[in-house]
Amino acid sequence: MKRFVPFTLLALFVCLVAAGTASATPSTTYWTPATSDVQPFNVWHIGVDNYFRLYQTQEDRDKGQGAALPTDVGLTVGVLPFEKLNLEAGIDYLGPATFAHPTLRSMGSSVLFNAKLGTPEGAFLGSWFPAFNVGIFNVGTKSQVTSMNIVDFLVGKTLGPFGRIHGGGYYGNPGSVLMRENGCKPYAPAGSPFLCAAGQSGKSQNAGGMVGYDYGFWKVKDKEGNEYNKWVLAADYASGKNYIGGGGFGMYHYFTKDISLLTGPVWFNDHTINGQWKWTVQLDINF
Image (tube, rainbow, N blue to C red):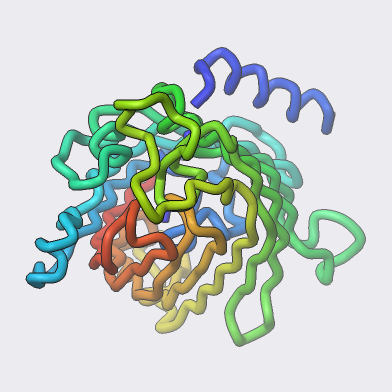
């Protein structure tokens, strides 16, 4: 896994965060941004994320659940030239697609923004000191829909030879239907595509927790002597019955230290919004 105020507001957020201390989807673990990784300075990242059903059951058809989420094509870059303080900023494009849920149909052909500020492990007070991140993501350009404006705070720590763990919380815009249960509003005007149907609560679900884990193995070196893990196991989860609530687990394969392919299943807390579980394939390239 992995966004609406005008771009000027996002730029202001980035500037304010940077001033107070002198981050395509933000860097993610799997489905969520529950990772302490931040893009290094002047390193660009292209990500292409797909989420689709391997098959569609009759139950899927009866409930009118979409077979796929929008394809997400993102670009992220590191923008601070410091060793102990990193900042990334990015933009995503969600491709057009057809979905049964009105909110997801409204997401198609939209643009999202994100940023993340963080310190690496051991930046202060010795090697035991964990990594810290604060960020904003899912800042979209469609009022009441992609205007999720989710602010998150994360702490990450390496567990010796047992991989890395990341955890924290998030708070999103309750005015976005994607930050509400069932992706609807009980008080929307009559005839609105966001009006809750009978039996749907539409209550705010705009805050929750996130946790992520990754474990790399099969170390190799490239021709320049750079060491990296050929395979990385990744898993994460976000609480809340909203668009980002859910998680999954899968495996990264690194063709080089800068090119990887991730695949595995993703499941969701709110099936009204996202439908049943999907399979994801994600291509990531640094340059």
